Length: 251
Image (cartoon, rainbow, N blue to C red; front, side, top):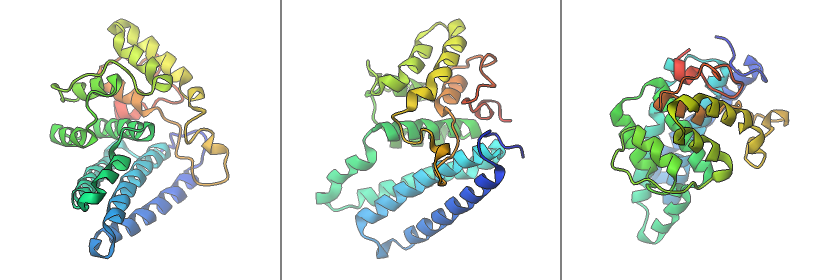
């Protein structure tokens, strides 16, 4: 197993993965006994398990794990999203309005959704998994890029927004989809070239310089997702520093 990330060592990722697995084990044990938890806490822990599982996938990708070996973790994302929905549905009527903080399409959640879908496609999850996952993500007709990705994944009756929610970071990627197929590779490379420096205002920027375990790898998962779904020739950017090529090619 060759480490994919050039910044941190295999030992760093081993330690971080072990810690993340321990946290997940504790949270899953709590959710196995929901009667001891307050209703909103059940939802919060379910949301936390999904977030930590996505971090685990990032760490495993950076460490160099085989893509096929990540499939069970990707399945767990949907398992706990179902549980999140069940616990949210069971909230008292007066607390139902709290769901907006777990389900609204913030930029953090937008990026997590794109990462989730990139891994789901990369490990080869089936159409039923994709359909159910997109159903939970919802937020139809709010963002042009997200809507077009979901349509390409099979949500063909989905309305398409005429705007982007997060133009600063994603206008260059939407430009890729608006272009002629022959122009898409160069535009995707341009997007990747500017991806990291364009994220100075986002969590995780320069995380590798901090004295903690908050670095998971710098990977533009949405580039892999769009490349795979729209069959873009990635030969001019396959070796790009921020492109998670293994999610497209399986290596």
